[in-house]
Image 1 (tube, rainbow, N blue to C red):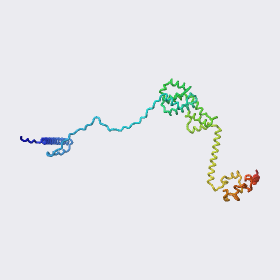
Image 2: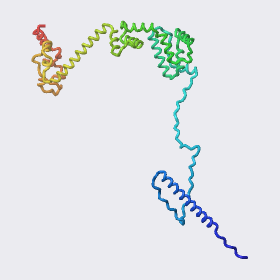
Image 3: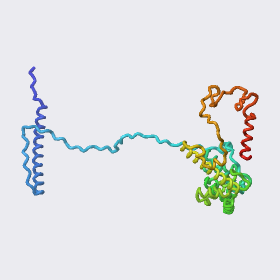
Image 4: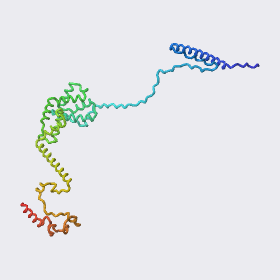
Length: 348
């Protein structure tokens, strides 16, 4: 069997053909680029660029990479952002009418009968608002609870309000406005203003008078210009005898203050005697003892711990004045005789 012919490698022929084709394409592109540069130089009226020498034929050129536009996705994916949960307050729980009534009843809210006294009406409204705010009720619940404790004339007034308007949409501010129009009308407020201007203590105690004045001032705040004006009007309401007592107390405290100041001044001069500190008036008002023994000149007794002369009679039944037994110094005849002689000499 004859040997097979050896075939030339097909791969080498194909590569050589591709290289030649690439070289020809590069030469054509270089020529085209040179023409474009010449045209550009003519337009700019500048010197023509130097002609770029063609690349050597035997040097393989790198294959041209075609320009490819970047592909932009239609829906780009955004970076993930951490989601922080927002604290949403829980919705207030709606109470049933039974639960609302039980909670309000346990607070023992005061009842209101429609009194014509505006001070008592104002006190009722203030106490009721404290309870309603504590229970944290809505406006509609506040109005409902307030209607629970209306009695007699106040209940009749509330029935007329329900006829005039829709109370299911009433706010608490609307209820207070309706309440004040009924029990704090112009006629009532004018009477309260007159009472405040002419209010006097009378038979009331000081605490009762101050409380009544505070209530009137709260109803008529436009009559009180300032805290100073409030105090001035309050002082005018007290009885005249209390005013005299206030003047006496002021005088007493003033004298005490002067005495303390004089005592401090005397302590600052320790070298002076009490007679020199007090002046001549004290020497005339109080008799001075003469020839009084000065105990500071004696030594301290070891038996009784005091300073005296002679023998110590402590613990014995002897009189400290005459030295005799059977009596004490306060009952000593010698002491009584000396006292009588002193009174005769003074003219008593």
